[in-house]
Length: 169
Image (tube, rainbow, N blue to C red; front, side, top):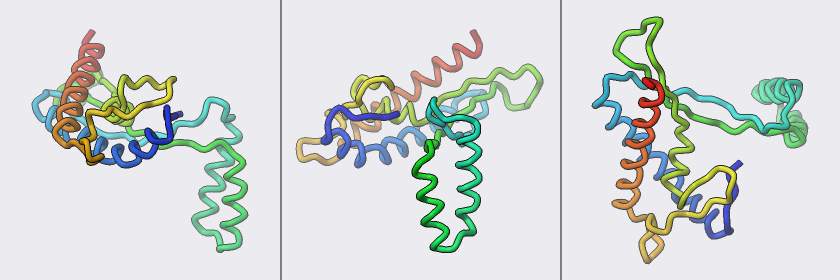
């Protein structure tokens, strides 16, 4: 789970993560257009390691009930959900070699959020509290768009290159 080194890092990340996501996705598009690999995005859910299969099913059932619940029922369901492990959304980029599907197509997968975190934070490592990369902010606190785009482009190209190298091994 993403944690922050300081409250200031958390506040700055709240401002930067959406622009990072936009720049990462745009650079993925630009880079994959030059490859002979098809790309698709997959929406996943990640559960905390402590979540049991029963808890996961209970959360899914309650979420489904919430869709049709009255306001009073919604409050009770939300209270129940608050006591259960909460999944987080994850977005994966799947690259598949070639333009036609065959049984032996090679695939490579990248975690889009991990790429965003790599852009947004200095020396991002999932197990450590994150610090916002100060080069992404101008002296007045505004986003340094050139630095953001340059870093996103470099990390996307590097990550896709590594993923393809691993897939083609």
